[in-house]
Image 1 (cartoon, helix red, strand yellow):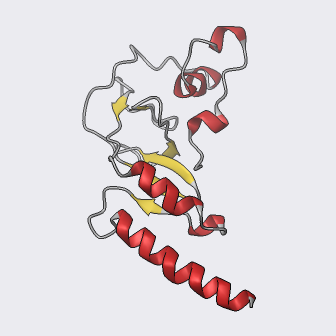
Image 2: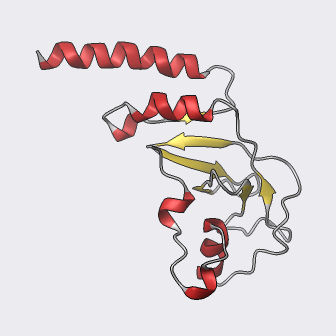
Length: 139
């Protein structure tokens, strides 16, 4: 399983128990992330070193994404006023997670979800080549 915001921002304090992981992140940084509704342009998730992330369209900063909360809030620039942006998850996320999770080296677990040059089939083909080479090297 790839890491999401839920792995890092766990609601542990009593007042955080009704919050999502992203709301916990905002609260712990002393911010009030607004109404909680996501409006504006969609942002697209990516995988880097086995972690789901989202890049801010305003400042370019990246933050861990949540598979359970389809919103993004930038902890760097606070996304100018109305901080929640909607995250557009691709239907291929589960298949990509499966393909990336079998890779033993964390640094090779990367995927640009909405890049037309990198469909999940490419990840699966890379796995076949990489894992075959790895088995031959071990023998």
